Image 1 (cartoon, rainbow, N blue to C red):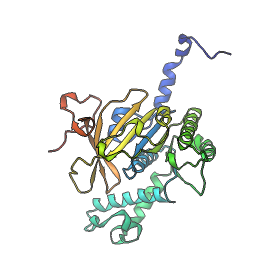
Image 2: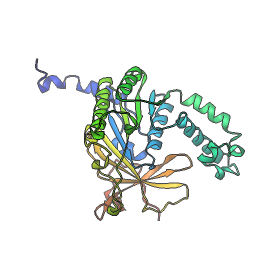
Image 3: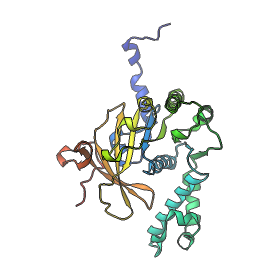
Length: 326
């Protein structure tokens, strides 16, 4: 039996379906990603890549927690994390925010390693109860899963099918921590991504898939990655609907000690096409979140340098763009 239909038949009901999809759109809660990609839609498979330690988990969990605060059902597979790690990092950010807002005289003493060791109670003591209450009130929709000794492709499929009815967004952090017995790592990763993509289409819910980037030859001095830099088979990026990379901007001087300049690139967008820009965004180490503006630019000199756009070249959709401070 043929699955072909004439175009006039396909277009019937198109507008109603599109409006229904738009009603389910989710924000990234990152200024550049929301400006450039507009939203996360049902059936999207968003690939988020970064080198080790560049902050891919922070960005993924920021998207997850921010959507949960808006009443969405968010299910996170924290396959690399220790039990309670996501909740602890969220609580720590709330404690930092509260201490700074209250102008606590020792707010600058706060740091995550010391807090984990119980050495920051002289700052946090007065804010602990409020942070717990905020999480209880605002993050009821955030559900986390921490892996046990084994978690393979079939376990992931079974789990997603169990929770998808209550999920508005699924985050898998990350791809390379899904177990496999295949002797070929690339083939195994490709099959895992294909399974995840098929699940996204089947359940009609968006999935953010976090992945490693390959280690690049430091002699090349490339500032940002390409699609070929995703660790594993090229099918990983081919199957995704959007592919995003984040990398520390080591060539940019931080304006404050607590800010980490970060390059964000959209390498693939099946709806609108890659915008071809590299956004400079400031990651605030205190709150583990990004600032509310960014600077658009392009790489130059064969990808070894970055320059901000001239004001005349900034696209109209880039509402969060700000000129770099001198």
